[in-house]
Image (cartoon, rainbow, N blue to C red):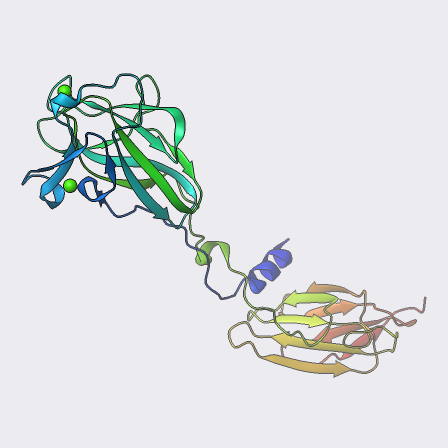
Length: 285
Ligand SMILES: [Ca+2]
Ligand SMILES: [Ca+2]
């Protein structure tokens, strides 16, 4: 297991940038700047963002059944798909001037009854639904979306709106913890066996040819240094180590037992001598 873990760590070196998902908040849109219809009017107020807000005179009356005649149309563009809330700055002067209707992308058909926060000044308040969610969360695709605010109670004031992404965006992976995939590496051979050497290099070898297998009694092997990306190749011409078994020895050498030979051999090498001396032969199969 230790060998396998070390081998995995040895390969987890690599580079490249990754996607980083960051919660998105759109810019505020001033209510006085969007297309308005019906009884909505622009009022001057030094405490409002931009010095103005959108409202209706009390003479406009209340609209306790949803209707579309008096409305203000906001348009937002978001780069990230995700869950969003609509954040507004509102002023609710009294208990009969503290609500709007709202819809996002024309839904729901009957409108959302948004009770705006009681206040004596402009405050931040997210679109909520009476008897329902507070705030209401909208699942939005990337792209353009409309938020439309409608008259419900005359005298309710709207300064500005924006979209705020909510929920936990996928965390950016920490390459120090998870590793990262890097570019494809042109390996010198089809690696049929591998060992993680004590100094961090990766030793691999093929059986017979580099990328084919005509059962010639030879082996192509190489080390790869993950710090430099450099390969060092050694060709061994008397022993095909395909399907051989390997073990890491206490002194850091790699011990290879067997392979494709009719007369199997024991090879040991690499850490010091950088070759594959045959140390013994086994009984013929
Ligand atoms: Ca009112
Ligand atoms: Ca404003």
